[in-house]
Image (cartoon, rainbow, N blue to C red; front, side, top):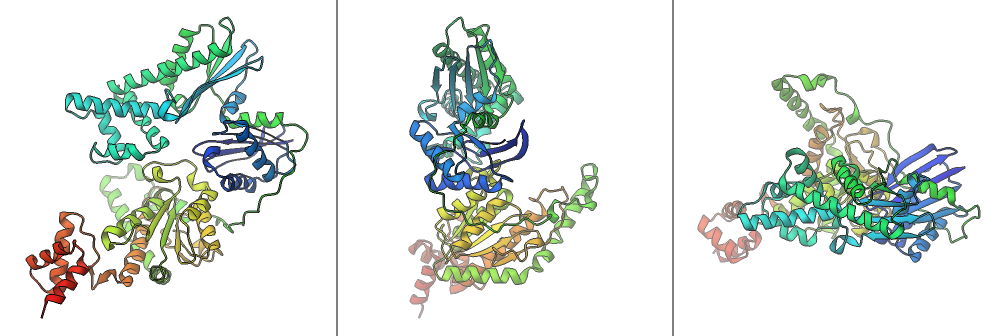
Length: 593
């Protein structure tokens, strides 16, 4: 009997296929699986991506997803599962029940209470008589007590309040500002108005670090309040599902509790103080094992037949055997112990090889530049897509085009696997989510007028292949930038720019040579394409957007040079025409006899 367990969460969806007595046949993760955030097409695509990665198909399925709140939600999920795996029995539920099913229910405990604290928080209690109750949750605005989001909001409010009272920004506040890559605490105002729940919750790790590393008074107080809130919710949940004399097992789950041992200890102590004789344990196995328990409960009757989903077109992605970037560099053996001067010399010597590697790809770079320039001329766009460092480099290059060339922000775009938060912190599993790449391209409304460039040091990131496959399906030109010559003739590509940068000084750290070579390539593509689009005269940026003093001085010098006038005349013309260089030049030319 082959059992498939699926656990859908706000960050990723885990799948586990086992045979017999838990012999693992496949284990992997795909994109986010909150039912409330997926439309029908996206839910089908998510399940199809799981089906496509299974070595064999299951006999029974158990699935629990975040966002399953009602009978209608369960029916919607059940139908989607039945459409993906016709005639395969399944049991569906929410992600909370998976955690309970993953644990052992001791015979001497009349009830169980799951205390979950991650991005959000809630409690789920159940009794052997079939009664169940849920406490907490309800989102970060009115609920989620003791969650990472609650901790972060409390930290933000506390630091702002203390700053107002003491006229000094506390160190915890400085830590959060640094984490968010801000230069001014006032930037928190705009950020807080638009930040997602997950973005806010990410600040909780700053609070935990401050408490653990230096016993920051504010951080410690915030976390003690959070532990009090969690323990009270758990005890209240137990009181509603079990009699006072009945023994209850409390299960702690969620990253806030499982990744911070001392915090979980505080919650445990407070639960036991309020309800002596109880058992408190931390969930030993992931909720995905609870999904397998649901699969075992699935009936022997096949699920009702439904219309089969439209088959997703295969991407044609094929990883090559190996990537040069993953090899060990013999020159850097003993790197950690190497004298500093020698290590610096070695790293720079390795970097010095990169221009030649990129130059060897000049024909492919030229093809890409011409394709991008043609796209710009016909109303098309350049869209970069990548994961991790590669994605950040694409976003960086895209973000530099508006100030440098006064292009609209839509002309050159960057897509990073995992979304905005992946710009400053790793989003686990994002680069492996091929379906997310497909959705990303669809969300940008890519057409045949556009050029889509996938960026991946090794060339192996499934996310970019999802992007490239969908782009090609829509008729866009597709290009790969990678440091792996093995992808030269890939069928999904119109062109490939593949500098062979070789192994890194620090094995596998592709932010080094591969990242530098990638930046060189992207510089070439946008600079040359926009130069050929009329954004440059000689070597001067005539469409520069002078948004600060330095750039206004540069604009003045450009006008001086091209119009052959003095600085006051150039500046006066620029001021009169909103600091638009072309208009200033035209006005000067018109007024010149």
